[in-house]
Image 1 (cartoon, rainbow over the protein chains, first blue to last red):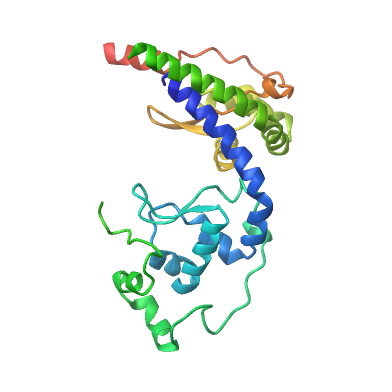
Image 2: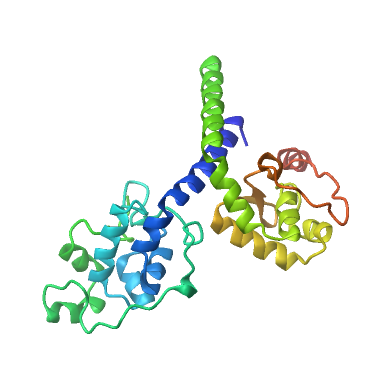
Length: 146
Length: 127
């Protein structure tokens, strides 16, 4: 490891801890349910919203709304030239959030945001591309090559 | 070119110095909260990237599994970083406990100083 790399690594380590500490209170108010924390923990910059929906059973439109809030709170980086999907900037542990202590959100019969009940029922089985068309700018497909 | 690199390195050193100054309190707080037993502090201190989990476990009087479990948890906490080595991965501490006035417990057995990774790799390439 070169001297420059060592210095940059040290700088990153200090900045991460300082930033996580500064955002801890915000994170606790934004990531306030078990499902939201679960979704957050899956944001590796590659996973698609459809895959998150399949893994967590949280409807994709709800995930999309949560992601917008998480980006605004500074907890998640939006898709960019290096990552096809949203990327969590911290781990839950860095933010002082324990999955086991969070309450599960109340079951709702309809997702938080949906154009119409018929569209929502179709959402889980729809091809990913059509979902992205419904939510322009929400997330790029993981299958898209750049 | 060489002079420019040297100036950039110097600039990074200066940036690191101020960032350390600004972030020391938070880092110490995380280290104290996370390394809440003597054994954890010792395992962390010995995680220098030159020694594997087996050696560290022996010196700290614990198991290899415990060392690896600590590493995984500390990586999520951001206080160690992964290091690729032959045959797997180990973790290296990102901070020196002494820099934050945190006492380092005595190891149960003395760890032999290993060759730094780049030296060992160079030797391996020669053979």
